[in-house]
Length: 210
Ligand code: GAR
Image (cartoon, rainbow, N blue to C red):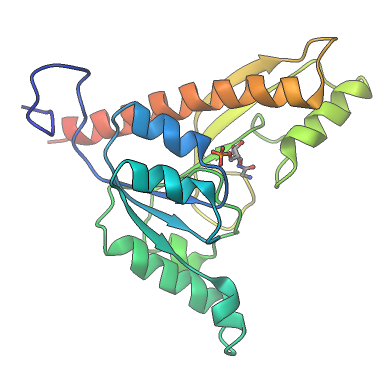
């Protein structure tokens, strides 16, 4: 029996525990929730993140962590990252999924979850790292430097920005009539599919391990 939840109808829900880190809207979190993946907690570094409402609507535990409360009291970014690791570890994740998490994690966090931190980024490997990947890709298209962009899901072994062993990619063509908005919409749709498929695959692999 590899299904959690005991239901005999509907899509199979893989066993396992996911903690999802977010900073914003959480449309990718929503895709994981809608796919029935086992999200046990959502951690946000922004109290106003709409992702927190999405989690609450699915009765998923939420936590808010504040870098400012650390730096205001003379503590460091590494102290903050160690705190985030404690918060995450309390939920005993099999995987930690960074789904629009806009804070660079140091080894104070990453070393606690080796091979278990997964990042989603709206660009192909080696292109457009950082928080403005879609704008950067759209600009590159207009300057004739690219004809397509894409999405990747990768492991996060170290402090490299949107860089690490690639788990999955998908290309997204850019159309002559595209605006930044229409491209963004198409990339987001691709992200939702790729993230769900990749995380589902990781959980299935985990279950298949002896
Ligand atoms: C997504 O496009 C994700 O790939 C991106 O933030 C967005 C979050 O959207 N992440 C990065 O740019 C990481 N460098 P969401 O909050 O609607 O899921």
